[in-house]
Amino acid sequence: CLVGVIGMFLPHVMFWGESQLQSLIDKGRTPLPIFGRENEPTADLTAWSRCLVERSNELTFEDGYPLVCSISIVVAKIMTTGLSLGTGIIAGHFWGPLFIGCAASHLLTDFANL
Figure 1 (tube, rainbow, N blue to C red):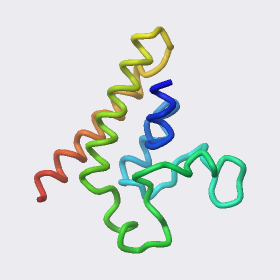
Figure 2 (figure 1 turned 135 degrees about the vertical axis):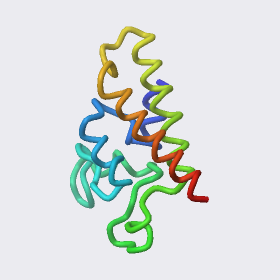
Figure 3 (figure 1 turned 45 degrees about the vertical axis):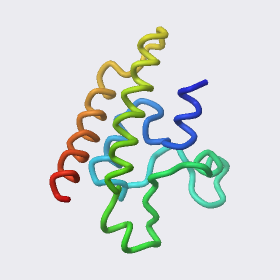
């Protein structure tokens, strides 16, 4: 239940990680896979989500994720990976740590640039 609630607000941490990793590497400029846009049936899955970069807004598209989103994504992915592995779900052994490392590196570089 907790993983699902986290996924509603931060869909970046859901699924396998290799596709979401590309979106994280370029700070949200690549749209998240699996989730549809506009009129597609899966577009409702991101209705409550945070930290999505809007392509129509040039300022946010150029800057990417803010520092708060980097912190949120790191903590949420650590929690969801830990919960998944701790409860016996086979996931997060390879891409999860890579994803967490990428998010943490963005966090540290954003923090250093303040």
